[in-house]
Length: 144
Length: 144
Length: 76
Length: 76
Image (tube, rainbow over all chains, first blue to last red; front, side):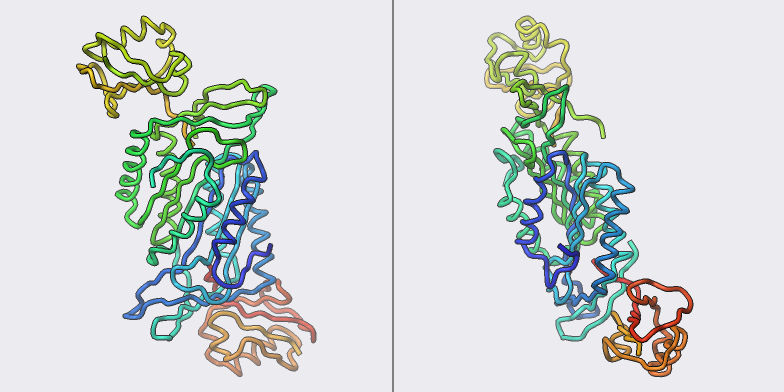
């Protein structure tokens, strides 16, 4: 599976990833982060959705590089999965999933947090917030 | 829902928790940790399953206390869910789920990691490893 | 007649999960009875809870009290 | 005729996502054409990739090259 999917991350997608967890019985810990579109208030308007766009080939390459880099840095990590939405994702829907499996919990959690930061930093994805009054605004990520 | 469930954590359970994520549209990040029974080798034998037992009333109280404590410590955290198996959980099946929802990613991930440590420390649960040759051994948790 | 529940490895030490003990008016007296019955228990680490609350030191026991013997936790 | 793709806010600046530019033999020449056409682009932060590789400085361009103009990423 590529790292980009069209539209919000569905329960089916998450369920199918959850089923795959059980394949490697040497993993003791799976850590995940899911990013959701918030219905933030911005100057009297509410965020209704985010429209994500991406540089497809560079996003796939970047996700693969992040995954290799994490595995090289965390020797107990077995699997790194990165999935990001493109297109419209309504408030309350999921747009990012990072899932890291490791032998033990510590590296699963640390590597997952690190992967999320690298995704924010390096995945060529852009977001346009769309408000309740149908105006829009290209957003930059706030620093952590 | 109480924090203890009988047997392994199923895809249905995980799916139903995933559906609940979308209820609070002010949450931007959901962080989860899932603990799985590893098919470890122990002196020529392989772990076939773990039998978990718990002090039911004290486990529920302890989970509720951990949840309140995390919310008090991390002001951006909205929801803390702790689910632990009792009874037999085979190798490759899940026995622990911690799920933390917060406004932003940082506290979601930090609070999730902290919750996992508190669960290991304070949830009155015990584990008996059952090996391929049907012998068994009560295990203590290794320090992090 | 206090109800005693053994957890984790202590169920193997006692050979049972639940037992009732007569004639213990305090935790200290109950401990003496239990150590008399299961001498190996002194080699084990454990904490005691009475009616779902951990206790330190002694406490008077009444008939309806439930006493839990709990080795170090090992969840997750 | 290099193919130029604008990403993020730059699609609004250019009013389009994809455009072809004639007569630019290098990235530097292409930039001059683009800044002539969309003067506001100089106020924006962006990086340039040629054929899916980020570049720093100049590079000769051939007919079949694809040049991406990418503002700071904002995924997640």
